[in-house]
Image (tube, helix red, strand yellow):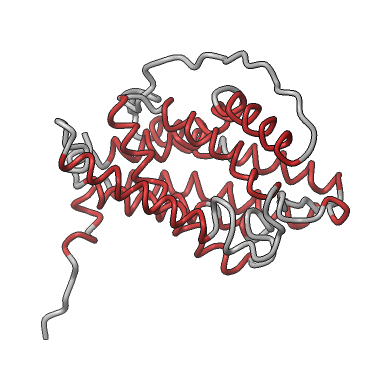
Length: 276
């Protein structure tokens, strides 16, 4: 009896399997430890989905510190993996330009629209500064190290694997309430879908720019402004609204389709053909 084995799922043909395993161990095991420490220390990863009066300030601060610190784990995983395999640390991973700080005057305003304006502007500023620094800790792994390992492979196939790995990596903090405090178990699946939809876009601009700093800025800015919807939408089901909910999925899918159509029919480059 012949056993069907999808050829496109053979990781041995995609990249150095031993190197991938080492990287995943360094990336996932510390994340599991972070999740356990968060759970037993009483830290809360609950975000803007909850009413302010129900949030324990100390637990929220702990959760913020753990979540921000966790973003640097992939960077350390890349460094350790490169050292173990005796390869130049951070070489050929897309580090080719410097981030610049933006000076923007904060708008004055009172009420919902004033809050939205202030949040948007401050989000854009933090997105290219402090948030980009922490996002770089992830992007050097997902859009730097892994893209280098998938070099020459089909773009969307690489995006599929990178998106799944990236999404599953979030599991420990998702189970602690990050992004989906009302549905932590279902949130694990939702986070994988979210990362699958966001990955092609980040990979596209990483490849077009030749720098991992670009997706780091995009990632940092997204993290900074994703909570704006909470200012105008009454919190209901965290699986439905927001950037990491169903509403966000629809927007990301539309953007992915637009990028694909642009790349296929209008761009001189064929980014979606393969990973360069």
